Amino acid sequence: MKKSFAIIILFFYFFSCAAQQKVISIADHFISIPGRKLEINTDGFPKQIQSDYHLQNADGKAINLLYEPIHFHYYSTPKAQIKLNVSDFKIISVSDNHIIWNAISASTDLEQKITGQMLDNGLVKYKISVKALKDVLLHSINFHIPFEKSASKYLAGLNEKAGLRADTVKWTWGNGNKKLPEVWIGTEQLGLYLSLSAQNMFGTAGIMNGWVNDGNGKLQINIKGSSMLAEFTTGNINLKQGDELVFDFNLVISEAADANKGVNPAKELKASNKLVAKAK
Image 1 (cartoon, rainbow, N blue to C red):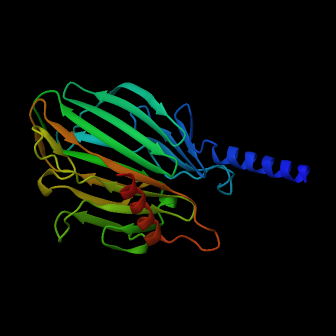
Image 2 (image 1 turned 45 degrees about the horizontal axis):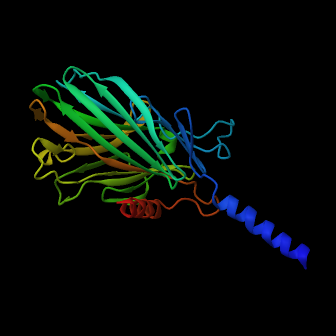
């Protein structure tokens, strides 16, 4: 009886220890959660998103979702860009269920401040502030998520029928759209959900939601060069010194689908949306 009781106590002890194990971890710029990894670039944006080691291609390499790092372009003219230089990057908080980092990049015209947070469920929350250091007229600000072509087979959202991704997908403020877009793109092994913040900045002088930009923003998803590019463009923006644009957005890195059931893009979109809503 005593032996059986001891075994039960040991069982609950090890079960408790396993339940309390840290699910999220970071080594250098690599954040790991079960089945997925996120590499953070020095500018604060995702450099690469991968399946975990046990989900690999035939050549034994991890499955990459991104062709290039996620990034912004700041165009002063249709062809000329304002280049930002990274001045600071730091991990500011590590806990059992989340990791938070900050990054600052700047030029003589603009300062970009980033706060990123990744949770152990795959949700990545970004708060982006772009401040004008002097008066500046921008032709456009473009936000890019360059996917590996092989990692963008399916799509759900943007008023599209969930399933195989169309050759070209477009979204604009017109056509009855009253909220910012959300979309899930991926394969059976890995996927990425994106939603843009529609937060109003009323009552805060000089601070504007950059995604909205008086209804001039648009999103296009199609093959461009060697990648499948999701590109949001703002259109012209005129900033006075001290004006601030906010480009907050959320990502959800999806777990691999059940190999026997395949992937359900509509289900992935809905599940990701729930994660974001729950985290607010």
